[in-house]
Length: 294
Image 1 (cartoon, rainbow, N blue to C red):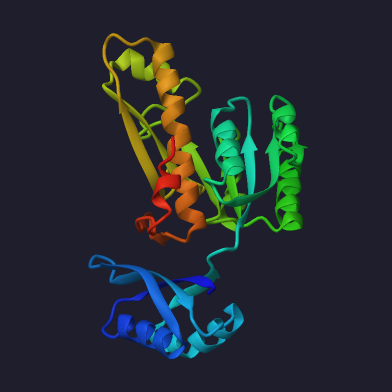
Image 2 (image 1 turned 90 degrees about the horizontal axis):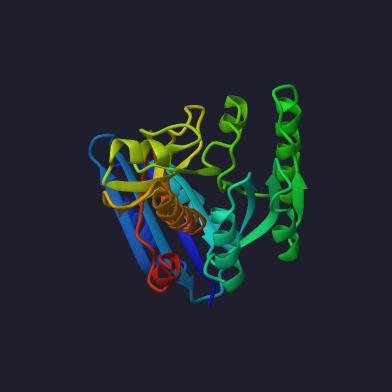
């Protein structure tokens, strides 16, 4: 039996869940997992439902028949083949801990994505990428060629059919135009639990301030630098006895874990944009172990 994922966002009102479950029953489908959230502040309703077709219904057939059900509720909806892998472009500069972690998870099947390209503004990780039999693209970025570089990136995204771009410690600021064009399709990892230490050496700043927790934040990229809707966060506790190098090492570990969990949530259609925030539903049964790996 083919498994599918239905995602719905719409204004909250009575009858939404009944309409969805009635549709799935009439289509010969069995619900395997369901989550929902009613935001009382915005008046928006969010739901994610996984189901299997017991009659052999195809994705196209389900999409065609659900349209008339969704229309009266003003639903923003999608039905996805649960087995289909999302095409992803990874971007990296000179810090490779997140890239190496994602490549490892991808290689062992813990992160079920299709990596269609790895882009960098340096050659530092070219050999690592090529050794994984993945295409590596060097796109150098300077103050004078930034527009051309982003045009090359967009062309690559279109040519590969990439649905998601992951900034795995890619140390270039993307233009407002690019952020707007790919809204909800670029995930970044920020080296702070709350983005209070900005700049090239945040862990040194954290050490100098004597913080007791350091962490990382994965978020969607917007024109507001490091302030996009947050998908995932985590922290690690530290003590006065640890050095700045310890901060860096622990910080890298938590960055890699947070980024992988954010990607996992996105590719399984568990993340819903809700204004400047997100609604993130828990992992479906059977997928939690791989998501928490590491």
